[in-house]
Image 1 (cartoon, rainbow, N blue to C red):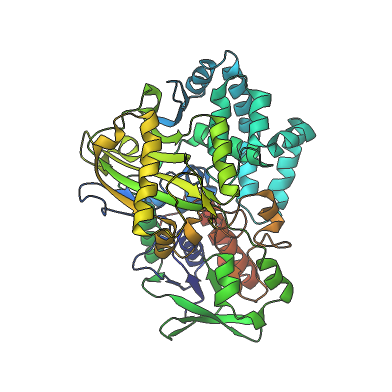
Image 2: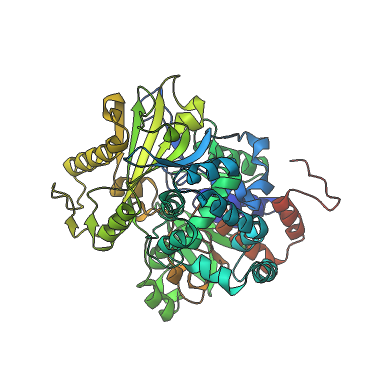
Length: 541
């Protein structure tokens, strides 16, 4: 009987399993899909010569995460790769905002839109340099982050207190208006805010856009060399080196509860896997509380709150094998790993408004990844492995375009929507479509079938809006990994701090389980998290 059973082998589940194993616990991970990784996987399904990431691709949060750093995954085969520039947002008039690895280069890009905007970017970056470490420390610990929060509060007070807090709560449109005169800085902030489901007019979108922009400025948007699944493979190798077990193709149908305590799980084929100490669930909150745990084991208030749980936007994705590099009209986008495709801030607002009304956007804002530019191992020289995703409503009421799309996502609707995405790219890169050797369409139902946590392709385990963050995540009064069932912990992006490949929900769940049992291995696990022992030296694996 293992000490712990972890349901799901996404990055959070694997991080949790590794930290428990570091503490000397025996751990068994059960995964529904044929292979591990959740939304961190790649394949060669578009063309045999091209590596394409199925879901996530760029990992600024992993690069910034002390949790991921503490696992020392480079010792288990992980190598990071960077594009020459981090991110670009081209416009149809040929101008382009560029987020570079160097602050001065980013500032020069923004000065081209309006003199003085480079200095404004430097001011925002100075605030990040002062507050960034404490923001990350507070972000990646359970809520409330007592120690990190206290340090952050002192630094915020020193940096301007309520005025700074106000700035971070602003809608990103307003933040851009207050900080920049030209379009470039506004676009970098707003495009990054829409990596989540935060419209330019949403409260708090300014803070999120600033956070993602500053992560890109400080850490880049790195990719795992060879494909996103290399990150998963490193986590699995590390787990197995510590005696952990992983079984794929084992969907869990039920969390077994006895006397108010989770005692194990039951798989879809009827196997019971007992857990001596804990069950950690790297599944969405609706899946855990709405399916895996029988309602009689849960408070009525939780079940009522769960009816109000809000998913983030659905996602539509297209993967390509291209016979050449994307022919952007402006050179600024050529060397960027990530490209935001929308013709200005108003087009971003229009896109988000259409989704809010339940309409499939007619000019979809696309986040486009140039993967061979970021990692030359992804495809033959002179070609490009690329993808683009856009968001669509969870519930479709109409098509803002003229194709009559219904959201049924039949084969015909998928092809039409993929054409729509390609036409949007073609506006900024004439000749793009002529380079397509092969493409693959991943519509919302397909994404969900490949990873059950991605409800219609929802990437963040629930909305990133303020009403479902901190102690409101996943429902009011929570914010921590503990659940109403003793020994059961929520270890997915539905828990604080939410989506992104940083490992925090899994680490928080693991530490909560360890703390409950107060094992002698807790200190060892904490040292493993920071990658140092008592003497300050890194331990051997």
